[in-house]
Image (cartoon, rainbow, N blue to C red; front, top):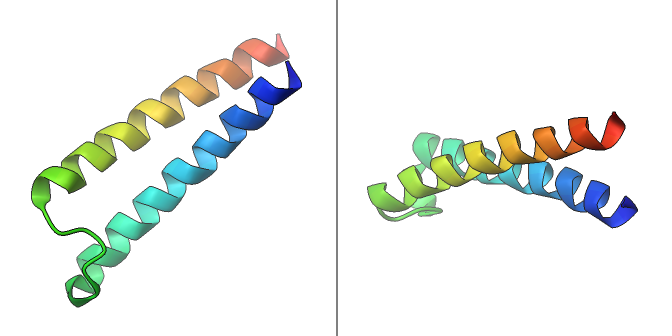
Length: 63
């Protein structure tokens, strides 16, 4: 079960990193972190799903 805990925490960290990259792209679009609006939407949806599922897995693991 330890590997699942690690993967859940890693997923949260990676999702937060994607959110930071998306925000940075909004402030400085010349760096071209993200090139299309569709990609941005999918990354935000991905991040939300990963955070919700990972927090749920962590909470279940602690019960």
